[in-house]
Length: 159
Length: 142
Image 1 (cartoon, each protein chain N blue to C red):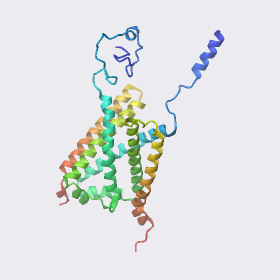
Image 2 (tube, rainbow over the protein chains, first blue to last red; image 1 turned 90 degrees about the vertical axis):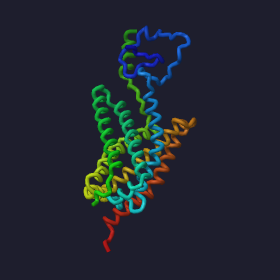
Image 3 (cartoon, rainbow over the protein chains, first blue to last red; image 1 turned 45 degrees about the vertical axis):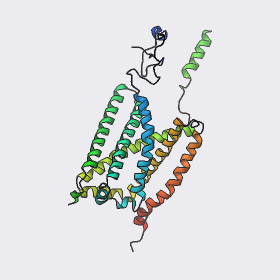
Image 4 (cartoon, each protein chain N blue to C red; image 1 turned 60 degrees about the horizontal axis):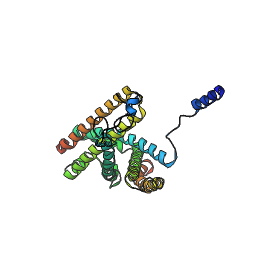
């Protein structure tokens, strides 16, 4: 295991000190340059996570602020929300799509945000592992439950 | 020399480790972004569960919604709106810092713009949202 990867950066989390072999590595001529963000597994996951946070964030500004405006400020605000109100909204594919998109983008945006926070503050490997296991389990349940509720909503439950 | 070395060593050992936290607009907006983000995450968790009650029965959903209509939870809704609004506006600022060539140069000014827009939108919203609670708490029933 080397502490320095092909781009000359310290491998994140590595406790191995760089040795002479690492320091003196010279690539053969005309080797294709590796992109600086590329990690050992050859993926750009962290870059895509960063892009996702920016793009989903932009969409969520409109989706969530629109949602809050309708639910808390328009007409009677939260006072008018009940089962019949939900039934009226989810009879329209437009609001179903809005809520589904909002649910998935917000939950994935929040999950990645908490993943970053766990990575920042939980220093022990075991703590990070269990916190992230809990996080991914909770997120999976929220996504499955929320999606099922939107797609299987039954207005006739009111009888 | 030995004495000097020992003195230097003491200085090096006792010197503060240094910090990435530099205060002012940049750091505090980042702290607030994290705090509001975590709060919104936990609200979303609760919100998906309470909405899921529409699959249980209209009555159980209506009962949980009645708690949302009380003055105490009304205050928490203002907190939620504030958290979401700040996170949204500061998120736009962070995106501008990342993608706009002059973003870093104007990050402080953008922070104050975020706060100005925040106050501008929060004041009328709070006025609207609390009207019902005020009527319930202090209003006459006639």
